[in-house]
Image 1 (cartoon, each protein chain N blue to C red):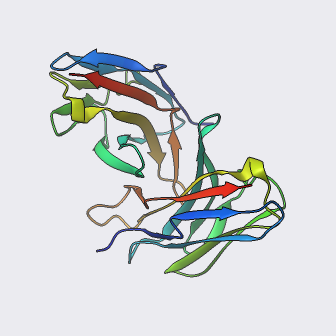
Image 2: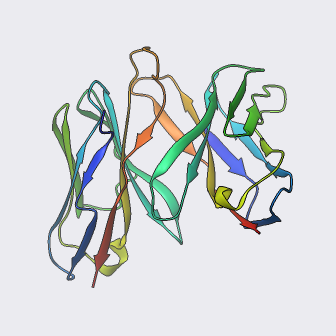
Length: 113
Length: 117
């Protein structure tokens, strides 16, 4: 079945550092790929998405490129802020009957001032 | 749109009691998902519906858990009887599969935090 693998956390960075969170996936078809973010005490919210190979999703300074050849969707940000501290989830979705979403285990990011 | 609405936000109950969690999906969305999140097990899919029909309930832990979706605007997750190990945050989420703009994106509610004593 489909699966998503993320780098294990927690990740601790200083403010203005460069961020990479690795994500790789296994899928039978051609999934859409997502990054969701969860701030403390809140639900998950969509950060960015890409629906086909070579697409780049971007939002709030975060970027991720859909790499079909390496089955990856790594999340990057050039300069993190304290307010980026959260848990980040990589996910995929395939359009079959009913459409299911598969999530990775999440990576906790802490940004120190 | 008000987003996905869940109630209650917090529930504290005693072991053996019945718990009912409620969810109102985004209007026009035709898929609804129930997830459970704990520190130990992370985010787990319990069940999802498409057009009010349960598609995959393989994540439902055991017979104590049941979920219904009587119409397109309402779903419930019931635990009877509840046990301390059911303590978790339960999320409802909805999406659309109809191909409109914004489709194929899962939108989460704020969650219901359940504590079973």
